[in-house]
Image (tube, rainbow, N blue to C red; front, top):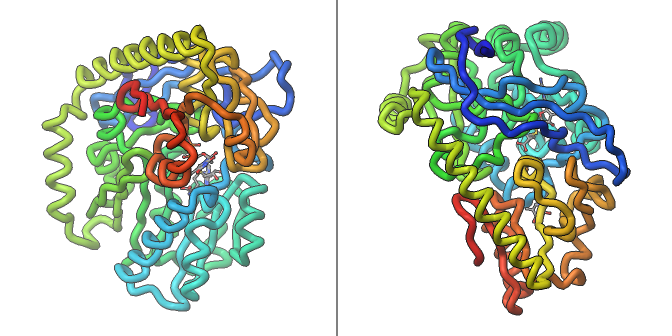
Length: 405
Ligand code: SAH
Ligand code: TYD
């Protein structure tokens, strides 16, 4: 049996997705049969409540100088991080000589707003191509993986951080104890450590199983974050639910005893226990719900294919790698995927090798049905495409269940 990455307790996996490719491995080569695969299983530790991948590929296989995800492709997310930035400036009364450190700063989607407000900031971003996109915006970035050693090295040239931030990055890091030690070292006495990630409560409620892929080693709850923080003399003092990425949670952590724990934290901890997020049995239904979605979606796609309907997909998301590979969605069922990210254009999707084409060609592809892989951006995308889709074309979604819209 595997051991928990947080507390070393043995646990039993509750879902087995089989052999999976790297979720962002969009390849120029259609015939590459030697693509890397890893066994993707997920488990729950009933001791510290952490939901986690049993095995994760080496970090250099996922984060490198050709990382496919550029955060700023979503204008909704650009605005989201502007509001996030402003809320931190106000909460911590940040000024010109303050220092904000963001981990996983990607193309500068969040730090650009601190720059615009003249607040000192530093990004930490190991994927060099996206780090360079941030540097082109004038942001100082260290291209390395954050951990205890990197925090110590940052302190040789920078003051302690008034705020340490991260979005959709702490769920990526299996050596999380070293990261928390780094945060503990780098954070000023009154500083705040704020991060947000997809929330396990939403994943279970919506059966958004596609949040599980190689990069997402942890799916956090307030229960598990509280435990993890307390192992490093840090304390979960506040939470704020977010609608992003299909339901995320923002966690506020301070040095132990530095701030009062809010009622919101206490209420969420109670709610999570009511929902059974502290019990292994709650996770077994999840696996059955995934198989129902699999059956319904494959039946629908086969039926449409038999009727000669053209189905294309929208958004070459990392999430869709789990969907296509676990369900067996191949180019005979979904003709192509359209996406706005230039580095994904004229590639083939990981594993099942569906052609990925520039968004500009979406309308001329003239589909009957559009499978929405970027379902977490549904509001933004439905608004953008409402005139085009009026013309008898239909969306297919599969979270929380298979539906034609
Ligand atoms: N914060 C952005 C990007 C999330 S993608 C957003 O929310 O949209 C996750 C990013 O974290 C990637 O750019 C990846 O290169 C980076 N990353 C992975 N491991 C990291 C680590 N140990 N330290 C800092 N960044 C890391
Ligand atoms: P994201 O939601 O971050 O998904 P994941 O974390 O699973 O990779 O990525 C969204 C993808 O969808 C990205 O490749 C860009 C693409 N996209 C479009 O093609 N058009 C759009 O209007 C939006 C919002 C995203």
